[in-house]
Image 1 (cartoon, helix red, strand yellow):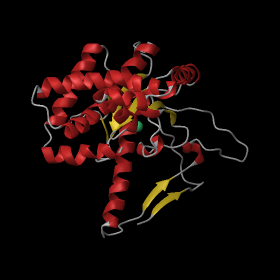
Image 2 (cartoon, protein in one colour):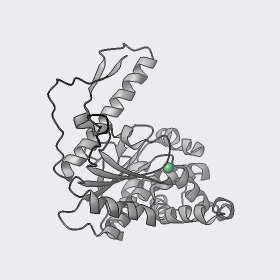
Image 3 (tube, protein in one colour):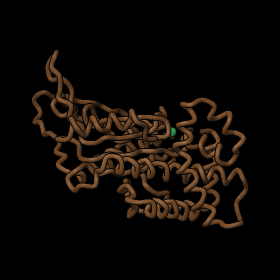
Image 4 (cartoon, helix red, strand yellow):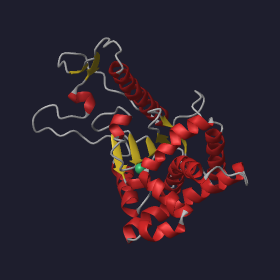
Length: 298
Ligand SMILES: [Zn+2]
């Protein structure tokens, strides 16, 4: 199986147009689908499948934000800001199949908002406003930061060790609101008949990954006062290691938005947590075990 990057200086150049938030969102979702297809083809090949036709990826300095001549410097013009987790398994540009100069990326463990993070966003909004159309919060499944926050919730004794420094504490504390919102929604759903503790922990980590991304998107929208119609829209989702999809719910039906708008208030946030719980708990026990006990290794 061959994957070929091909540059032809005489080929016609068509610069991609991202005129609005909808086009930006479509570009990210389509890019994630290309990434998934590439990985699936490699997996099929690993299992003895046919090599198939080569995948040819046209590349051009003009459309990839690369210098056209030695010494030339492209103008920075990303179409989206992405706030993602530092996890090495979730490289932002690769997951969305985007190129140089497409994304203004902020990565911090647990994709939480800090003052430096907000400062970077303010910079992007002030200096890159002509090209920016969308702001994305991207969490991911099996997140170590989320798992640590869940563990300090379930075992308060663990808090002293896990959050022993100011820096670690501020990280874990920031995720607590998502953990507690997820926990409330889950307990409302399962009532007194809680599953065993290992399953409960795994499911809670799974739910919190979604809710934590929603919390960051909600906070981001509120902090930046982006409610005006002409500002970049804020959306969120998570990258799921099982499906390779960027998705906003464990419910994988085609109608489910891959990235959804940030909640506008606390009620919408709570409603979203309930939706995630219902979608996750509607999966069979086998899927839950397969998908979420792996969080133990996060
Ligand atoms: Zn993470």
